[in-house]
Length: 491
Figure 1: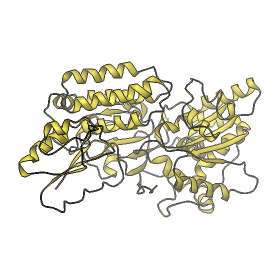
Figure 2 (figure 1 turned 45 degrees about the horizontal axis):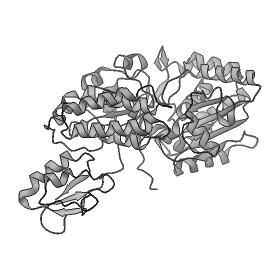
Figure 3 (figure 1 turned 180 degrees about the vertical axis):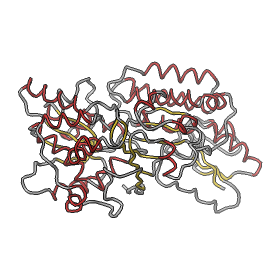
């Protein structure tokens, strides 16, 4: 697997989590100690008090208070008479999320020491981390090898890179050598996690924030950010930047720092389980819980994705919905059947299926909600519903056959560098079929019957068709109507 291009780093104000990375690409043990200094040892009550004083919350999704997690683990361990465990979620399952990977690649000791601090205070039996990229695994293993003698062992497990791998029960099952899929039962990790023991499970940035706070203390930690939300936040912006900024920083300042002067048609906040806010809101809002709550949005995994004017928001939504359906654990009906059903209905509406098709999308979204074995169906359904509400005019125009005609450039899916189609060696344009997307609907043969022919299996009989000059407009119409977006034009 090729390693994606590394994102650029940027900072608003003074860096904390990204300190020292302006002069080097990675902090080894010596450089880490030079920049951050040694980690103090804290008693359990001191760690809990620190987390409470800085209002430390999970930085991977739900934003659950870290101190409450610690107390929950302590209570469950005492009640069950078991030593607890600590697990770092080092996975980021969607292409737009970059920040945790960059922490593990560039400053892994800061991450690991936060987990070790908590493990020491809890008297944990095991400390483990699950990662989903080979370069991240290499960086973490190197950091573990650099630890001084006598350091508590840290288990490193390489897991498949899927969206659902980061779900708590999926990651812990993967570390245990089982299939990295959600357990399908509503049991908190604080009660039963790794090896069935009470487990402190949190994501990479959360442990990094704890590591920083332990070094500088609560008062210094609170010197930046907001009184009710102190400290900094780490953001993945447009799939190309990782930005550290004080909580409460205006979103427009963060976008400007990344060279994005216009929020476009709106901004997706929080990743593929997140919400869209419109361009006006993007120009006014700050990046903190209270400000984003006004738009029913949360930072969650910290992804910030503008939707530029030059892309089709309907096509972007269809692309993400299809990808999220493919990322299903396939263990419950809402995931295995509901999400593909939503993606199919959404694609049909996007390709002129009529207003009834839009109604079908909303019906299927409602049918999925609050019925899944994990949060994946709910999160995907909420994303689709937010897109429908935010781009209602666009979806309506597409549904009745008045599509915008703009391409889908992948601003949400954020693929690796786009691959240009090869120029046709023979004169004239060509219609190309992407076999990885085609599902044999046959609409293309109906729209351009003089060009596309179907084989006995109902699929196009070729991946490349030469286009006569008078068929180009029909081919463009076929591209827009293809339910799977499997057609492309090469000039």
